[in-house]
Length: 320
Image 1: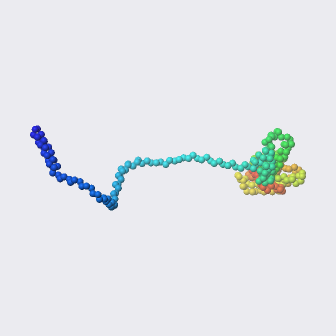
Image 2: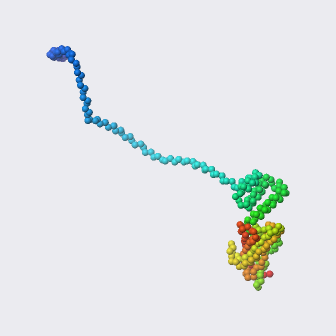
Image 3: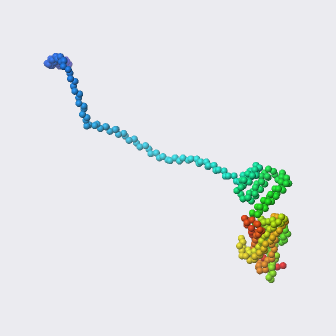
């Protein structure tokens, strides 16, 4: 240990001595010269730097890692159900002329009521006004509250209207039947349905047949102040029986025209047909067709002026 300390101290002593010798052998610097009095020229400006052809290339941006793809979501289209629109209001139809005329009559405005019906023909306008006046009058009072004069005027108006309307209706035979006896309009003794009449024998005609026929909607024209006239033409046909009609025509009887005159206008009318079973008609089933035509001069041409009805009957063998 003592030797180690000795060598260490000797080493440090040698180092210090060598350092001192090295410093003393270096040359000494001359003393600084005095500054000269000449003007000092500034150094020229350095030349501009020559541009370099080197252009630094920007570093590429860092590549970002791709995120994982999002999960696929299936989008269903959404259906928007709009509530149905309310229907547009339908404009009210114009008021009929008849309703307007009736309201005017109720409000005591007869002139305005006639103007409301000005598009109708004159004859129809008068008929409609008569009906509306009747309706408006009955709306104020009942029949029991009308006086005798009011009832008489009302009845006369209804009769005139009834006559005008019937003249526009088609001729008709509302009731027709075989009869045992015929007395007058509405009074007769009818036979049962599908009657049987005896056939002729030896060339002689068979049993007598009576047919009652009421006629409606006929014409009764005035030919003088106290006389009216109705002229009707009639014809009878006997055909083979066939369901639904259309059998073969066997016998035709044209009865011609019948002129009826009366002092008052006819409102009801009937015809009394009488004939015998033709001798050549054998026993069997037949159909009688009755045809009536209104040939009164001045009858309305806007309606059917002919009416037809049929009756079924049987012809039996001749007997007592």
